[in-house]
Length: 50
Image 1: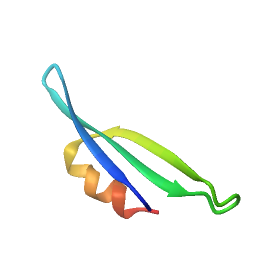
Image 2: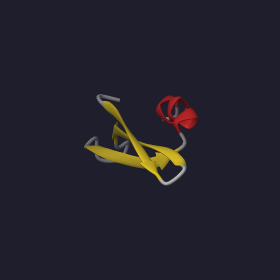
Image 3: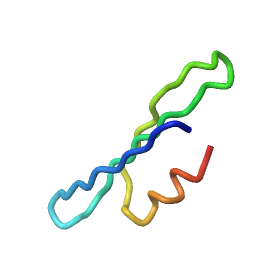
Image 4: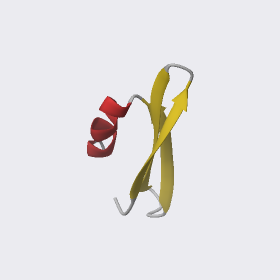
């Protein structure tokens, strides 16, 4: 994993975080971005998964 980034979002009464990580494809070897919007508590788990 080469890069990761987190942005805080707030919609109404909910606090959300948009996490983006760059992962290497096992088939082609090219890098691609994986994005997800989640609760701020789940961000650490998102980055620890491969």
